[in-house]
Image 1 (tube, rainbow, N blue to C red):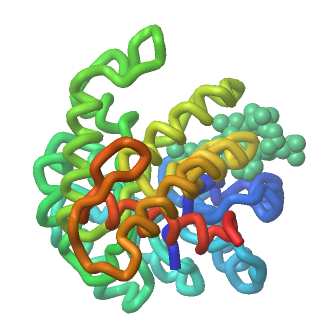
Image 2: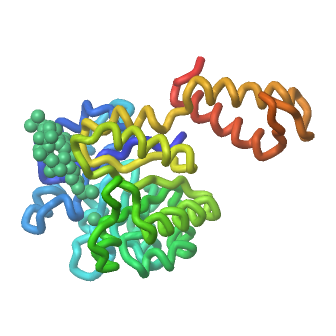
Length: 281
Ligand code: COA
Ligand code: MG
């Protein structure tokens, strides 16, 4: 199954938003038991999570974000409340033993660690992304990292990521590729700027991200669209396949340029994503 493109966070104590998320069109909904839920509502939120997961037909996959694997956060109760979830997003991962502890409790449920929420996490990605066989997708985020670094901003006035966050994003992509894990991008936080969501999603897709975290339902359509190959990209990929025919290797001229094995590999990936998302006949 292709990794989800849009991953919509919903504060898990908020029944109104949970209801709204059902029809938001997100590939995945993340019921958030961590920072989206106030400390004094965690118990109520766990009950709502269990109830929401009990009967959830339809194409949207339901994940639950659990609290950091540290003493006293209640992460064990989070895992148990989410027993019917497709997977668990693990907040603030900085050590491999945190991922292994959740894996032991969660069994075969998929795990998606957020691995850049603090400086220690950034330095441990090689270990955390390979800590359990059920880690097939991972997230990076910039906001908690900003707080951990003591940085005053994440983006410049034009909305572009500042240097240190660009470096972390690139390292994250490289570590994910090396670990064979799908990479999910940080969310857009400006609720009204739908153009930025479209531009950001497209740029992330072109870099190799599989999807993007989302904090508002209004962002979902632009994220879903941004992570689909365009008609022109599908046509270009088909041209590469046609040039190879049934030959296994070699270099060819396509649209005035040279293509060989890496281009064939990329073209197949483009067509696979387009086909699985139902975007191409
Ligand atoms: N999931 C589901 N529904 C949402 C939603 C979300 N993430 N964000 C907003 N909505 C709903 C609202 O409840 C509202 O529904 P209504 O028309 O039935 O009242 C509608 O969408 C419009 O919302 P809007 O007024 O634009 O936003 P808001 O001011 O109510 O909420 C936030 C703004 C930021 C608090 C909200 O978007 C949110 O909670 N986002 C997720 C936060 C989160 O989980 N953070 C942790 C991970 S980074
Ligand atoms: Mg956070």
